Amino acid sequence: MHLRLALLLIAVGCGKGASEQAAPGPRLFTDDELARFERGLQDRLAETAKRACPRPVVREPGTDGPAAADLVVLVEPTGTLVCLPEIGKLASSSSIEVGTLVETRAPRLLDLEAMCGDELEEAVRKAAAHRDACSPFQLGLRKDPDTWMNVMYGAHLLGLRARLSAERGTPAFALWMLLDGAAAFRDLGRGRVGLIGSMIAVASTDLLLEQARAILTVATLAPADLDALIAGVDALLASEPPFAETLAAERDYFELYYGMPPLKGTSWVPPGGWPDGTGPRSGSGDTGPFGTKPMTKHPRDEAGIMFAAAEGMAADRATACPATATLKACHEGLVTLGETAKSHDPKAIGEQLWTDLAKAVGSADTTATAHRIREAIVGVLESVAHPAFSQYAAKRAAGFARLAAFRLHLEILRQGHCPTEGELAGPPYPALRAPAALGDTLAVQTLAGGDLEVSPPAWAASNKPPWRISCKLR
Image 1: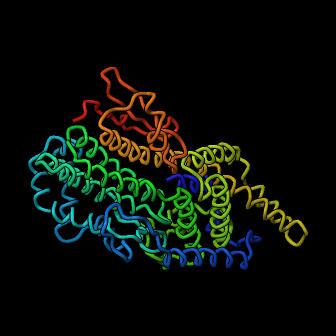
Image 2: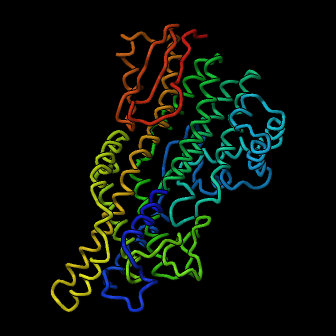
Image 3: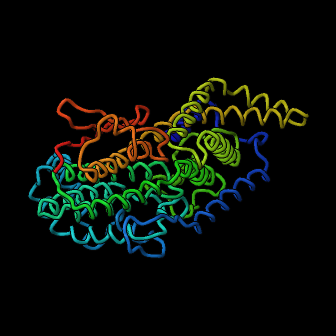
């Protein structure tokens, strides 16, 4: 959404665009530069198409081969799993949120669970078993689904199924169901997947973890079950993909859906297809995929600006959040980057720049003036886009912190008692409270009744309540 806002903002600031010019003036980008941009995008998409995403499975036996086809079913359900959209219809018709329907065991929701719960459980288990788990929704491979809500409905239904299973006396089986779900849903955001897919992976996992917490609060688990579950959670924590992958996907998104259309025209279809509702609008006179006013005097310059902005922003974000960075380091780097980007002033872009370029034609100042205009427009795009990214890093961290809280809860159950403050300072707790990918430490507070509350670091934005651990252990 921030990218669309950037386009609208800059379109207003640039004055007359390409579709309004009888005779386009001097160009901002050479054809050689545009060819280099296009080749770079094609090369990256080709790399994405052949990449693998190896990760440990949460439980053996795992399976070889890519997970993509099995993951698609969880997003674009077929067969019996077409029950998933019915959950949304039920919530809409009853004006009750799906989470409330789950907690109150709404009869119609129980009917849906009976109808397709077996198939959902099997689909999740099958998807989670793969050792190569790239998301099928990586940029250039498959367009984003028309709706991601089926993933959320699936998480709600799987959570309900797990709770029912635990209440029938099989809590370990129920927790494995949820752990398989967490592995599969998180894989939807693995690889070169954009921000929306990445956030859906976190949100759906959060729904499952809340049901896991509820089960742990009342369940009694055998030591062997605890050991196995702990190993599974450790595998999931260790396989957290770097946030830099998501940021890299945003460059591909920007170039594929904003940069290529002005070069290719309205009949062009990007690799993987158009995301719902974002295709060029034939006959509208617009050159961009979202019907925005052109920013330049020439359609090919329109493409050049998109590519130049994407390339520059990607370089900035890669410096702020490299592949080896923790979530905390990424958040801090992106906050700083956002504050720096805000210094650009959209009002600095006006018709005078184009007048200067026209006057410079044929002189030694032509290239310098063109570059000045390019830099001004890119600067505005950066000023709108960069400040938004730190909040996504914070949300990703909050979801990861809840997974780490789940692991801590399992350890406390294995130890058989809640740790004192002194015990929290000694093994194994410091490592569990500060998982490597997070780059920070979970807060643990002892409540008046003796229970513990586990919270993410303050910078990790979360609207979830703290993870509560009952210290009346069974």
